[in-house]
Amino acid sequence: MSYSAEISRLNPTALIFLLDESGSMVEPFGAQPDKRKADGVADAINRLLQNLVLKCAKADGIRDFFHVGMVSYGSRVQSAFRGPLSDETLVPVSKLAGNPLRVETRSRMVDDRAGGLVERKVKFPVWFEAHPAGKTPMCEALGQAGKVLQAFLAKHPGCYPPLVINITDGHPTDGDPRESAKELRALTSEDGPVLLFNAHVSEKHDRPVAFPEDESGLPDDFARLLFRMSSTLPPKLVEAARSDGFSVGPHSRGFVFNADLVAVIRFLDIGTRVAQSAH
Amino acid sequence: MTPAEPLFRWRVLHLPKHGHTADEYEDSWAADLGAGRVAVADGASECAFASLWARLLTEGFVAAERPPHFPAWLDEPRRRWSAEVMGLDLPWYAEMKREQGAFATLLGLEVRPPSGEGPGTWRAEAVGDSCLFRVRKDDAVLAFPVERASDFGNQPCLIGSRGGPDSPPRCASGALLPGDRLFLMTDALAQWFLRAHEQGRRPWESVAPLLSAARPQEAFAAWIDDLRRRDGMRNDDVTLVSVDPGLNPRRDLR
Image 1 (cartoon, each protein chain N blue to C red):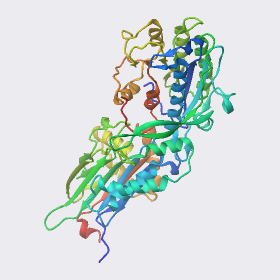
Image 2 (cartoon, each protein chain N blue to C red):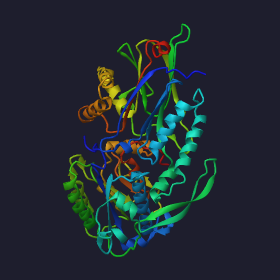
Image 3 (cartoon, rainbow over the protein chains, first blue to last red):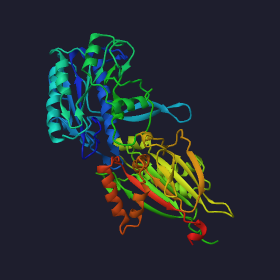
Image 4 (tube, chains in turn cyan, blue):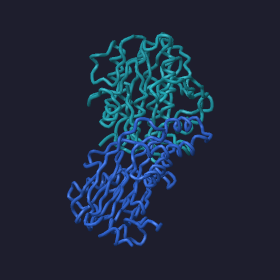
């Protein structure tokens, strides 16, 4: 059965994040209109990476269950790692954990465990800052992810299929990305084809959508395009999403509209999880 | 006051997940023969400081004021967990994991000897999917708290080291008859055991030769390795505690 390989240090998998850094990303983000879409993407990727690191963190260090890549596309298609990681395309998660650009301290209201809220300072590591400019070469970015994954799959043929997460406003300028997406999803490990998930960051105020089974509730052509490019969730991820409180079915796709994909990190099975509700 | 006499014989066999070192094993067990108590716990792999928490839970269960009463007795292990980890200087990610707390399952068993004409008894409490099996007359199996192999998942109920809403434990109890054997197992072995039994096999028969082997721990490691490779056992830390109450626990174990 596909998508059943164990994710472990002996058999790690890869996660590649594609980040839209095009000029259109300066427009306001529908979910938080005081923010630019580009800042919505930066927040999303920094939260995704933080959750990924925490998933692998133990008291004595980080376990390298994942190798992580980050590609931005705007004026150029390039690795989005900066600072000490700037020459890298794919790094083990321990290296990512040790090399954020900076660790900010932010205030957050948290449950005081007595029915109220209390302000708490929390650390917020930053790996990516947006500098939106230029066009949206999404096809090229998908191709770049494919190249990186081909090399990874040659080294780790038995891995849990790698996951590519594309965060974009969905306005490609270098052709129809469905073909590039199809080529990417045609890459396989012995455990199944590469997964491509899309997070649509839109200026529209429509209600957020997560893991829909069809495109009937999607607000525009860009959302429908990204939905069609997205992989169907493997059964185990459907099960994990359902137990986290998402409304999903067997045809649910790895697509969200104005919602974040952090939950997907929780769905990846590396052992006993601590249950939590998504909503 | 005379020292408490043992109420049962017990053996433990354990193995870390394949690919992990012995230091990375996050199950735990503890027993207090005088109190007639034994416990196993399984630290959740996505937590930091989970093996410490599993150890404090098992030690806390067997040492608690009797009878162990959820959740009041958890105050002491929680205080000890905080005392051990809160002062540590940690990198940002380990600090965040510490903030989230550690989580573990717990299965606690208390065995009472026969009194007067009455039989011996057992009583178990469980949070999560670490399981107790009572095998009688080499056949009848009572499974607690998970009764079917298909009911295991990767999000069992857990006890947290930092408090919060505690899942109430599930409880079970029964009589102990001569020849009864009790096995406590963490989830991967328990799931294999239940599946084998559902297929009409007698999985407890595989355990007996391990316990009497010249090097039980090595025999256990080879057996588990084989089950992982050939019989579909999930790769996870494995712990097996075998409890033999004897024919008449009070007299037999003097």
